[in-house]
Length: 347
Image (cartoon, rainbow, N blue to C red; front, side):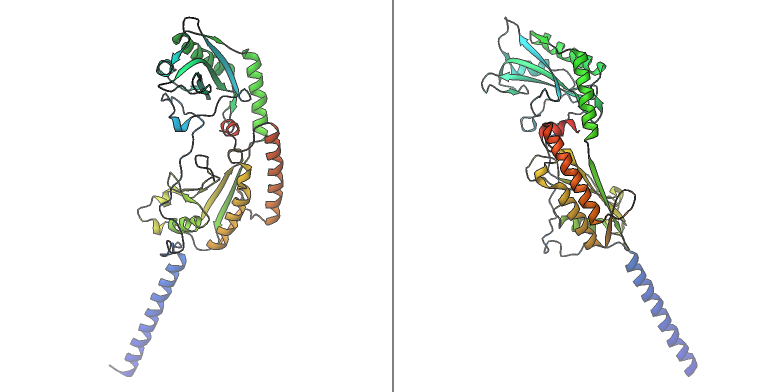
């Protein structure tokens, strides 16, 4: 082989190596960012899961009595229509078992939660009927409004039918408020709730390289988020166990469920705050803002609104000031954010 041939061969080899190196570099540059292997060493939890919390809004056709550890808040005339059920003279006491057996098959009247409570003769408190207890009276209630709208005449009539059926089964006489008055009250409450229902959302978008699910989870965990109950969801738990999460972080569920999640490319994630569901004392907006900017810094992202417009610190200050006014208004109406009544109304 001549010197020329050897030179060309060497040059060709150098060019080939350069092409391979460039290809590898481009592949690394464009592939999703991966979680670092030292997650546990950095204090990132791997096994934490979204805590379960009290479900204050019964689901359709929910015919199973609520367990003792997940009892609903007591009915309140502020957001409930309440009917009284006085036991007949021949029936002074009703057992918890008899009351449960007489319960209607569903816990809803249309789209509104429906409930029955008994007056426990031992504890002298109103509660959902439970086995082994004795009750000296009952009351039934239907919620005046929720995010499905105001209680209407048809739903009120269904409430009456369910209540009357229960009353007949336990030998009680039911007394109902005037339907016209309660429906009007429901509409007023619905108008108030609609004007003061705030749900905030931030979007974090990747500037350059996309993210893998593991990379998102690792960085979110460093901000206190734990794995959610469904794929592509993480939550920031409330300080009190059993309450809804302070914040919810979501990303593409299909990416999280992919056969090889490490190769799934995520270019945005969302932070969500349901204002009425979270106690003001948790400082949810401040934590949402801080988490968003911390994640953006760590993941090379930008915080935007739903229209992909970057959110400046000044905008955050405006939002924060408006939220303080909203909190004040809710408290003045005895519907403080995060309270049992607010969680029921705004659901």
